[in-house]
Length: 285
Image (cartoon, rainbow, N blue to C red; front, side, top):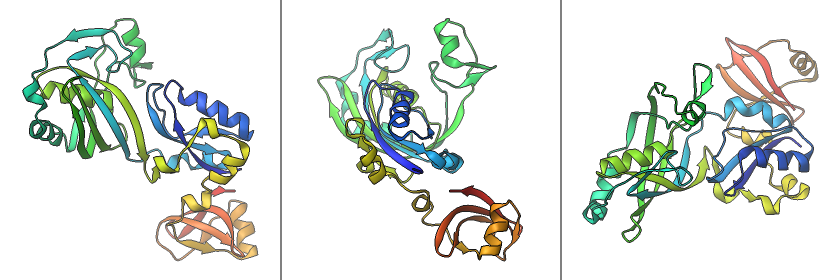
């Protein structure tokens, strides 16, 4: 069983919890392309069997989220689990739809973002949350991110909450984005709820719930490695060249540098990479 399985991660489960559950069902090696916090829900692509070899092609995907921002309260972790650090009045005038859309729109494009203190980014060999838990100060360097789309979904004036949808680059911290949006609205805030609805080409409507996880469902829903690379050009190898390819011999091929699907007698063999007219095996299933 080799490929990609899209899970709709529920709240309260870590990505590791889901990996362990799928590993137990499939009895295969299982990995993931990027964690979701236990409080977050939504799309979690899992790599199964030789699908784990595809991770390098999947880690830089853009992502899309539905977010609920709670205004008027700042927490230590930037989400609802953290200790309340500050409360600030929310003027209902700032919840005017035109104003909210203007503020959200101001975050479009490439920019620098300071990651939250409670994150797994390493500084001097230690994760930021390890410093934060010991109340140790450490300099956090900003990181370049890109916000491609950001759209208002709903304003709840009674609860001082804003729901929006955002499509962003890898490495974007939605907790930091929420705090930055609140600051621009002249208040404080935290990420109350987060649902990831897209990771690259993988969408929430492809995902299966952990309640529905069985071996039969996994076999039916798994995205095969061949399908994962469906847009790549094919290269057909005869038996002699296939044997050389499988043995790691580089073959001369008059094609552009890039990644290719490899076939022999119309059977999918795996993925090869061409560089300077030389084809080298990369993933063999």
